[in-house]
Image (cartoon, rainbow, N blue to C red; front, top):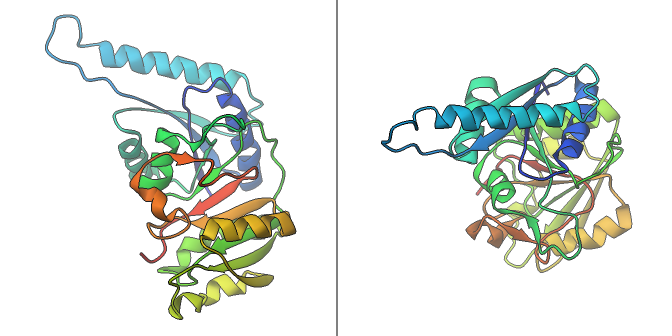
Length: 266
């Protein structure tokens, strides 16, 4: 896990997410790219030619202020500034550098805040194919010991999808428990679990529920995992939520880190 990207939004607590990423990166000797995205469209007009440059410089200064608030612990932190759409920026940086993991915060931990993922964080989860760790705001880093991996189909398109999970498991000696949630309309093929997934697991539980998330809620309370691992695919864990970028807390929420792996079968 060489390259970790941390997208920075407008939250005043952004340094907390960066600190978590730094603490995580020290375990893997990773390099961190701190990313700010801005959007400037400069039309014809005198004196506007350097607007983009000025906005970029302002963003970079803000990122430097965030870095000053954390304990960098000798982690190599580089700044990446991008003018344009967040998804395009992430994909461009991924093509250039190869991003192994995105670490970001959800929209809010507040009970009275309706959204778990806002428009930007939701688009990152739904419109990119980069493994992502969603970390509750203000959470202190702790090594993972117990990982609950939940899914509604055991079919994997490619074994390498599991690489981030395997790397984390091996680094921390973590126990991986599998939860296959049989939802309405499941097929026998869905019950065939990829051998690579079985090989890294300590326990397999089958349950039935109206949605994968409802099945997960029940077992999270029983197993008390340190992290929830799910798969990013259009008909998977976030199922009907793909039509929009935001995710309401009534649809999904978690008070532990959520590791979202890349696309499985569609």
